[in-house]
Amino acid sequence: MSTPSLLILAGDGIGPEVMAQVTRIIDWFGEKRDLKFDVSEDLVGGAAYDAHGVPLHDDTMAKAQEVDAVLLGAVGGPAYDDLDFSLKPERGLLRLRKEMDLFSNLRPAQCFDALADFSSLKRDIVAGLDIVIVRELTSGSYFGEPRGIFEENGQRVGINTQRYTEAEIDRVARSAFELARRRGNKVCSMEKANVMESGILWRDVVEAVHKADYADVELSHMYADNGAMQLVRAPKQFDVIVTDNLFGDILSDCAAMLTGSLGMLPSASLGAPMENGRPKAMYEPVHGSAPDITGQGIANPSACILSFAMALRYSFDQGAEADRLEKAVETVLGNGVRTADLMQAEGGTPTSTEGMGDAIIDALNASL
Ligand code: NAD
Image (tube, rainbow, N blue to C red):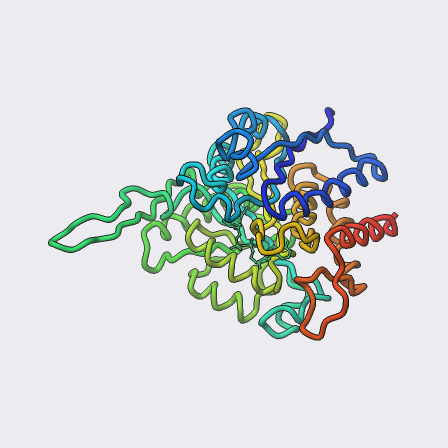
């Protein structure tokens, strides 16, 4: 089989700082595990605007379509705030998601034991939490037509349309069931079938997909408002949650905060399978470019490193190596190594971005 290919788009702000640690880890897997990647690098966001006058060059877009996975750092920053909407750094990211048709957004909420006290919930509710929210990313009320602000009887009316086709629900449901098979084998589908026709169709299609091809996976349904309540009441009851774009936006942020820190949260966005059977894929930390700490060498690289672990698992079928990397991060945290964002008020000396990378590589070496 040919060497798997990876396009790195480090982006802006702390993006290149955290990505530098990921590059060291990719090298480690090449040297120590004989897991080699054909890595190329390119620009996105403000960095691409500075070089090419656009937030994503067509050549970069073409490369992203060809590789097995894209790994993105972060985009944006105050220097680009006054640009025309079409040239803003975030447009580069949106173009990637749209043209690669990345319809399935995986947002894990995993609470490392050493960080359980960072959560706003009690330790016993979140310690050991390991769930994934699968959010439909390319349809629903953020895209449905008609949309706009219209005049009606002398006043303005704001309209957005929640619209889903069977095919759109079918493919994201499959993505959730496939994911569940690699994890705890449970899917909970969330909608509002009690008050929305799109919710009735959502439930119908999820059930049909389940019956036809995934009867081995345990399926349950929940109204999304109850889901929000259950996420803060007893989040460990879930394994994989699948939901639409709007509910997924809200529920995934809610679930993310169960784990405490933005610097720890990875994500994956997956599309349809390519010819080689791998899904089109982009992996990125949930956080942004953090202009307030850029250039200080203190950003936490864990979210970006854990995004690479997701790439190992979901694009490259290297679940055991993904486990190894996640375990290394957990070990490092367990040993009390902390970047500044993970320091409790009582303090101690924070480690640098590079120091965190060193510690994770030490833990990887110790795992051999
Ligand atoms: P942000 O995520 O960049 O930062 C929020 C806060 O969290 C800041 O205090 C920051 O210092 C801290 N933080 C974030 N990541 C961290 C890390 N790895 N280690 C330590 N601390 C970390 O969000 P923001 O401040 O709202 O946005 C800043 C810029 O990033 C904006 O231009 C925004 O548009 C952009 N943004 C980009 C993405 C993306 O690239 N996917 C996502 C969100 C925001």
